[in-house]
Amino acid sequence: MTLQELYENIGGSYDSVKRILPMDKLIEKFILKFPEDKSFEKLSGAWKGRDGQGMFDGAHMMKGVCANLGLDRLSAAASEIAEEFRPGNTRRLNDAELDRRMEELAALYERTVSGIRGYSTEKAT
Image 1 (cartoon, rainbow, N blue to C red):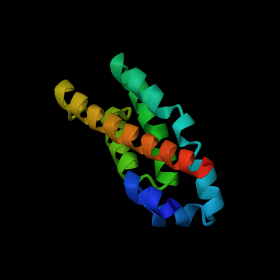
Image 2 (image 1 turned 90 degrees about the horizontal axis):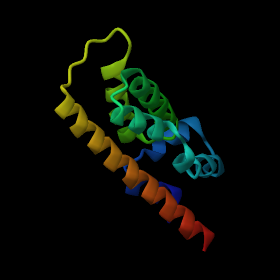
Image 3 (image 1 turned 45 degrees about the vertical axis):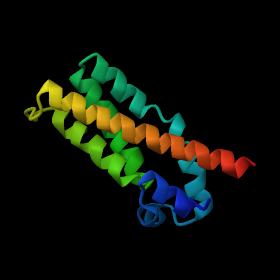
């Protein structure tokens, strides 16, 4: 599998990441580190604890990491959560809708991490 195929499989944008990291070697280096990033873990923990500031912090970090790696759909989902909890913003989503959006984000995250791990395993063999 090529990097471009990986990006297609995980719903990322190879073209977006190429604008930031112009060499495949750099893209591969950083995309393979993505599963180790703790921003989703922070966001998920804050969601379970209903910690608005923690949700903002985790989602905002996740949005930036994902945007830099061309994980546009994941970045957009994290951005929506970050904006919901940005200090000074009024919440628009009720708790049930927030839970639904977080479950969708979690599923997308798991699909992305699974795809990256599969790519890593394939490259190792």
